[in-house]
Image 1 (cartoon, rainbow, N blue to C red):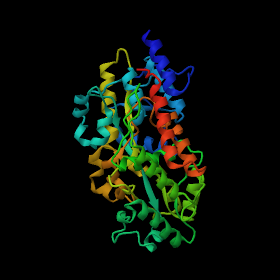
Image 2: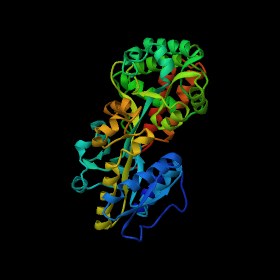
Image 3: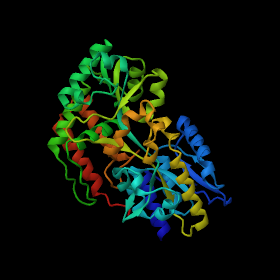
Image 4: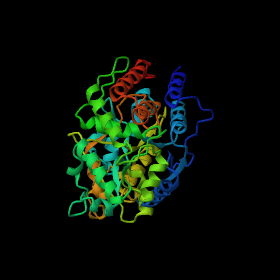
Length: 430
């Protein structure tokens, strides 16, 4: 009965059933089996990170299995965990944790064992660590914070008068909706074309990332009691949507950009700035070795930066081998402590002793937006939200209607509330 219940929940979380999802525990006691969703450059960097961390693992090897990002990954992880047939450790977006820990799909970490290997709660930003907890147990160990930030070409930004003397973005110049829009106009004059790129057309997450970070800057939050109705400040939501609409009105800033077009506009220097995730650092640096970056400006008064966190979780095992669990804890601790390597991708290492080193302080432009980790906000902690979820897509669809199709901001805000209430009315699988 338990297996059937967990399998049903797994199908709900992933958006559908998936056959043949299991993988037996590693037969080699000296090997920790890991599932993750890092391909391409990030995948190669994780291999490098594991190699660098290996001497601190006490003879343990790590065997990676890379799965497809999004619904396929989370469906397979849930189904394998439900059957007790998952890997020793898996990567999970922190924003998805609320859909896994309460269902019994994960085992908690042994914090005393982590501490033995040098990993303690105080080594992480409180905003991130608090999301690792369920019923006062730790169900995730954060590898990084990956925030939604701004990238810029230093030349036109300097010409527009938006850089400080030490090369940082002048945050005061973006500290209100009016100033942010004026900065876009100044950048358009400096580039001779347009100012700030934002790719959102037909995207399943970008509008939500921008909206939720800005909405949290108003000092408000979304309270989402499962089975109840959302508590939200609709006026503040309306104000944020109205600002977003002006930001992409096609005057100083481009209007109808999808994600690839926004990247192309920026790398081709048609725009001086782009609103994007730090995970695009490699792409932008390839086009401009002097690329600049900054934490997302505080536009509405309260510092808040939309972000997520790649984290390590322990898929449920009915009878875990304690010696092997100890190896898993040691391997993950070693990976965290070698986080300087992971920072090369643009991600902010969650293990803060790494970001406090002189070596990290010399990283450009990563060291200029590391402050974002102190103000991160993740998706609301409900089972249906998080990275790659239908919830993000549903919110982004409404926001796109406001930005692209003329839906009035107040009507868009009410439509978002209605969609949230529809999600809340569905019973949690937990």
